[in-house]
Image (cartoon, rainbow, N blue to C red; front, side):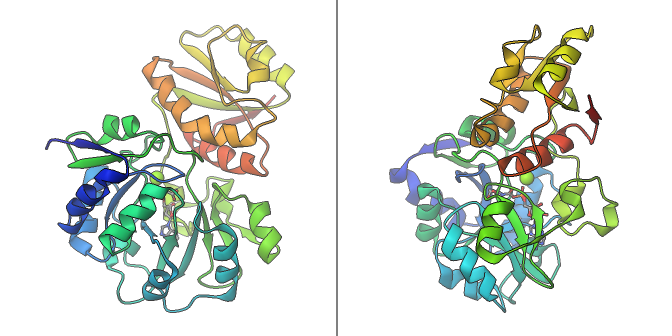
Length: 336
Ligand code: TXA
Ligand code: MG
């Protein structure tokens, strides 16, 4: 299959035509690129799993452009969801609700809940409006590899597998949306992302954090199925090192292996004598999110076989970065 790269607002109607015909396209969002299909068409959604080589038991996020669509997709919208939607939509927050009959099983992996978000990327919103139906979309990478944050990344992974990619530039946030369950019991953070736990708590008070966010939990008990797969991993072996900058640099400089690189902060980079993949200044947590996946991909392009990553703090934006890094490292984290 030939994959055509489309560009900008003028091409939105053409890209929408593929979706109206039940095909799958690459779509920009502010978090990462998505692999989109008509969320109300089970057969179209099944094609996403095929292109991505994704296990069918991992449900998808449904992307909407207005709140009426949320009401159609769900049976109950708690007041907390309205408060959070007011604060963070359009934007990188996904909320999990009880689903309505309109949502096909392919989207929910057969479950009773549906994950919904309203993205803020103008082209994503235009595309959903042009289609007139919501779009189911996982990240547009092949399963297991780092999420794509540019149209080039999507082409690298999906060329020949889908008919079209809409280029919307480099994703401003750079990691996936925050996933918050509101479907039963107390609000629970299933995946940290573009909206921080602290931002959510400033609106609705304390929330629970699912154990899978920070640990390698037992597979059967995980509430966000996406968290159980090896994820975000480059080909290089990643080890996460926790400690001050000085200790990190001393440890890395002592290593004698071939093919080493350091994934760390600008401030570390100045003191290292191995190649550096920088996440930005230690003072700029948003930059860490923005750069993370691109740097993991770069590690492979440059042929590094061993990456020592400097552990970010497990709070604010750092929590989302930590959550991805610990999976890229297959939970190999060491205290210095
Ligand atoms: O930022 C994002 O969220 C991007 C862009 C494209 O919107 N999408 C994305 O999708 O990251 P994906 O499929 O890579 O991750 C979706 C996550 C997975 O961890 C999945 O298990 C979880 O959301 N999820 C989806 N539906 C769910 C549900 N009904 N209950 C619990 N978790 C759900
Ligand atoms: Mg993904």
